[in-house]
Image (tube, rainbow, N blue to C red; front, side):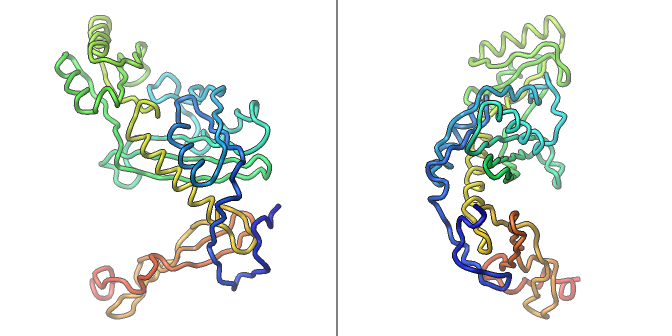
Length: 301
């Protein structure tokens, strides 16, 4: 099974072809684990590009692993959470592939002053007992929350986030709220929930609903992530033929175009096969052989 794509004997000094084998996954079953309609955004890409026959596993109560609205705290990391979703789906699936996603929203991991959305896709190959993970971070996200105390504040918030295509959640406090209203579909309903909370609790918070079926920017991010996953599945190890041959690290030292000194810029991407550990250095970005002197510590200390 490991030699499924083998094109002849190769060794570490061979030049890889980076050939694409678009038909390997054609007709194979991909089970998408979701209760929030993520299959609507993942399936079109993975079915059209790879030929997967997609099915939805909705029996797993993924809300038990954490909710964006705060009823259940997520205690696992995003990857561990997506892996657990696939693990629980094994009760309902016996063959093919399992796919689960997990998202996080908050301060950017390096640019802490801006809000970012981080999304993970976890693919599990049941037959091979192998997993493949892709991740992407975007600044294009609709993640807003605020305290409100008037109808006008409420309506302004709805207009700002793009309601009703972007849905909202109304609750009595930001953390551990005892009243949470979801799935409101009209401004009148949202305002009514706000008034109830102001009368009953004297506090009201409104925030964007980050569940996939109610968050258009997250839907777009899932489509992008599906494209990234398809690219990774179509990247084949030239040594053993295993899918998912991808960048695992980088080699720095792109030379300065003036003095030739090695800079901190990326010289090569290092591709590694997860199955056989074969590695290959590939120029990054392609076609760029030298770095601009402004990034050189010798020319521009």
